Structure formats: C-alpha cells, structure tokens
Length: 507
View (tube, rainbow, N blue to C red):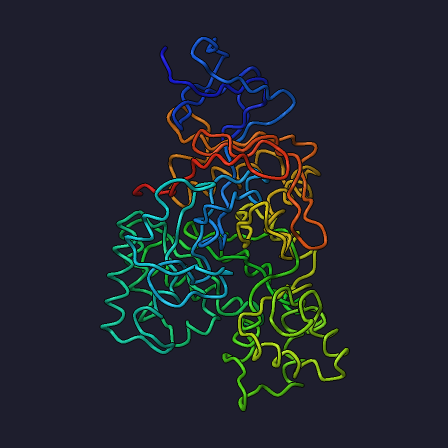
C-alpha cells in the first residue's frame, strides 16, 4: 500500500458517524481524504505523522447547520478559532434570508466589517474556492435575492418571481446548498405562497432544502411553521426550521403541537443552540413586533413597545442588551438600564438608539425559559446550529456565547450528563446534518471521505465563553479540515487553511 505523506491517528475511540468502531481502530489521512480505517499500519517509513489519540474520541468534525459567517469565513485574517476550538469543520452560511451573493446592500445581520461586500455569483464562488480556515457550505438568502431583483419590499410580480427562480437555479447548479428565508425581517414584506412555492420547486428539482427563520415565534408559531411546511409539501422539498422555539415563555404550551408537526412527516427538521438568549439587530425587534422600523416623525408609541417587548423577552426591554452601537454609552447595557440612566421611558430610548444607529445589534436575554430550551434541544429531530458568527483569535468585541460555545455547551450540558446519549449527540452534530444537506463526503469516518475530523477529550470538553462571550471552548485536542490540522489546542488556530466550499451531491 503506497500513500503520500499524511497523518495516522491511533489510540482513540473512533466514532464513525453512526456508532463506535472496535477498540484498536486507527484512521489514516492523506491528500485531504481518509485513506484507511482499521488496524494500525506501519506508515512511519512513508512519512506519516502519528497522532496519539489515547483517552480521546475521534469523531467526524461537527457541522454547524446555521451560521452567519458569510463575510467572516472568507477573511484571510480570520483563523476561525471560535468554531475550530469546538471541533466544528463545516459551516452552513447564508441563513435567515441573507447571503453574500447576489449583489446588493451589505446587511447588518451578517455583521459586516469595513470592505465587506456582496458580489455576483462567479466572484462569490471564487471567494469560496480554497484557502478557508474551515469548510463552508452556502445557502442563498431570499431577502438578499428579493432586494437584488425587486429593490423594495412588496409582493413580487410574476416576472420577478421567474427571475428569482432563475437566479436560484443558477446558484444551486453551481453547488449551492439551498435557499434560506427570514420572514419577519423588513425585506420579506409582501412574500406569499405564490412566490415561495415556485422557488421551492426549484429546490426540489435540485434536491435542496428550504431553511426558515419563520414569520412568528410567538402566538402564531404554529401557523408560521405550518406555512413553510406547506410550501415544502406543495413543492416536494425538505424544510429546516431555524432556531425553532417559542418566544417568550407565554407560548411554551405550544411545544407539543409544534413537535407533532415534525414528528408526523419525513421532510422536516429543526435546529437550535443551547441558550435561552437570542442575538440579532435592534431593527429585528421593531420589524417582528410592528412590521416596520421607527423613523424621525414616525415612531412607535413608547408604551406599546414596552408592553410588546415582553412578548419577545421575559423581562421586556430590561432583557435587551446592546452589544454594538454608535449610540453614546449604550454598548454593554440593557435598554432598560440606559433609559433609567437618562431618566426617559425605555420605549422611547429604544427608538432613539435605533434611529441613531440602524445597525445596532443586541443580545435578547431570556427569550425563553431554560427548561424550554432543554426540551427542544434534546428532541431527536433537533440538529445543532449555533446561529453565530466565525471569529478569529484577534476578535475582542462582545458577542453571544453561542459563537464560541454552542457545540461545546451542547456536549457539556446535555450529552455528557446523559440527557442525550453519546452516540445520538455525536450523530446529530455529524452524520445527521450531513445527510440532511446531502453532504455525502463528510459527517462520517470511512475511506474516501473528506478528512474533516475532531479529536475530543470528552470529559473536559465544555463552554468557556465568559461574560463577553469571546473565550474559546476547551476539551478539543485537534480539529482537522481537509486533512490539515487546523486547530491543535491553544488560543488560536494553526494557520493551516485547507478549507473549501462544501458542495452537496444530487439526491
């Protein structure tokens, strides 16, 4: 057996995506692929580096089903340590209706930095071609697509729907993973089945899913889930409901009927991160509650906003913490605290902050009760999606801890204590998302598959994000991407950038 220089991992318990292989199984990697799974080979003469995995679990690297690293992932100065230190090897980006292609306004949901821009499809493909910190699979954002085609939020005309279907078809034919919608963001205003079912038919033709930030996670959550499932049923495509949970605690009684929707069909799943807090723009709060954003001379009644906000966070505006804004002295404080310091009504101050900086981002604390999150994330149909961003070791700005801890926290709080058994937990982060997104070259350990692997110190792995949410997880000994060791402990990644675009196979 002749192989090029590579890596031989021995001594670990090998989880192949479905279960554990016999003790003594070794895994050899060369030229970005798994080339051997079985008894230990003598490969020293061929220059293989040997990694001793004793006391650890060797697993396929995790797949993050919901990430917003569209711009961050192609930044050559971003080493991706926030994800790599958790054992994540693949990100699915383009979520909640916003993506980095086609051309249009850079959206605040993607947390753009100076110089970030949306580009045409050929340039987008070139950005994802190679040299990434980890693998990236991309969805096309429906809101970004609408803005590119229509220029405004309203009901689309038949000609506009045809054009959107054509652009989606081109995207999928070029290896795109599917279409995402963000139905309670301003750009989605005017959507309907007449627009969405034709787009879903394009998805069905390519065997790709629809992923959904649904229109209402409150009183109307059953209807909102039913809406997107109906589109998928009519078109024959799969559907994934993103960060699926009722908000706030007023609607916990709807959990069982929600579960029933998914349990009675084959084409629908959902994902979630293991936290009760949300994280998005301040603009979302107004769009979600009032279907518009405030402006000078066109404000929302402040007392109505204060009452309505209790339908988003248990503590209302006292649970909305500003993380980044140009509004003076806002960052790090809740809107309630800011209002009290200014001796002004919180409902008015929230609008002042938005009008001063429409790109303000917030942590929505206590959107749900922890017990609600426990029930959802332990459900067998729930995949793990961070809903986070990809950050490098130089990142210092406060963020939601899910960016640095979603997968580690899931293991620490749910898998290791046995709330989800070990095999099921690992499968739901590896082979299950790979199967859903038709990523047939990963999510399992077998000869010929892509060498995206994680070496886990199971008893130590856990969240370490800290108060500002930016400390890397602990317990991952090594993360391999495309056969290269991208992370090997410590505060930053190795700098080896073998990541590439993750492309699904036809169903």
